[in-house]
Image (cartoon, rainbow, N blue to C red):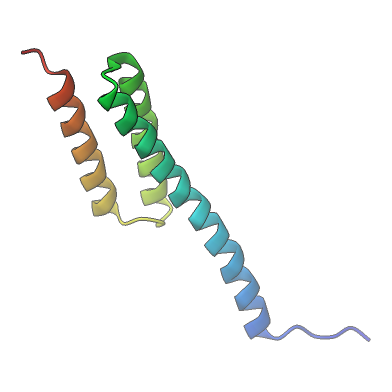
Amino acid sequence: MAVKQTSAEKKYKQSEVRRKKNKAVKSMVRTSAKKYVSSVHAKDASESQTLLRELIKELDTAARKGIIAKNAAARKKSRMQKLYNASFAEK
């Protein structure tokens, strides 16, 4: 006869899968942000613009999935855009 799985065991397994997926997405966002900031400090405008687009896309995706809060994503996008504008503004 089969052994019946308890609901607590199933819930634990589900939460572990979700935790690993959420951790991967958060890690990807942080890595993307680090790459972007390093390219800005290296004064590479075209690469920075490309990385900024990728970072914004990843932040929006994470916010849409509920991994990070909507306002947190907006705040991070705003700060990164301000960094770009301050670094590459026509003076």
